Image (cartoon, rainbow, N blue to C red; front, top):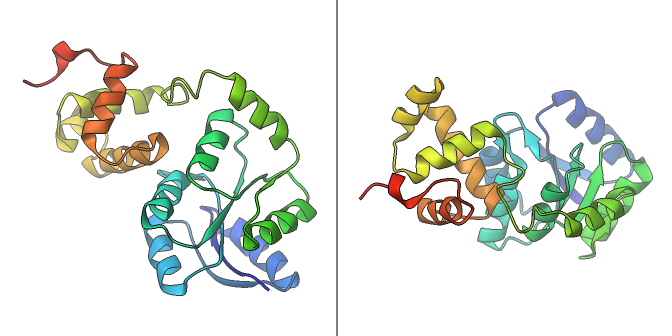
Length: 215
């Protein structure tokens, strides 16, 4: 039996997973759609294996993966996602995920991924081997900004120019809270932990030029 925690933004998905995992003899000790809440639970419960979706509405599973890595927690993560993007696959592994399983895979693959992670081994589901090959061949590794949406690139540029969340929200017609969420998600996705590193990436990949930076 493995003690598991579920993070997915769809309650019906979590309910289905809970039923399936309990039928396999595992203990589902908690669930959430929010990375911050999930981290507090994982620390408190000392979770063995985390099942994590990468797309969590306005938040991102990468936030949780990056936080797990920073804290050096023993919890092992299996990513269970619809995302078949090479960049997201390689980023998940870089941030310490033990398994990567697509949601269209069989229950047998998920069971194997959980067993492997609980024993400290890695597991990639079917279709992921091709994803791994594509991630090596793509330019995403050389350009970590390649997979960002136009809105994410706008926000990076404005953050790098030294603008506040309130100003950025006013320019883009979104709330300051949403800007802060984007900023947190971008830092996790890009593997940086401060604004200085974000500026460096933006300059390196020519998203902004040094003339636009505050003096």
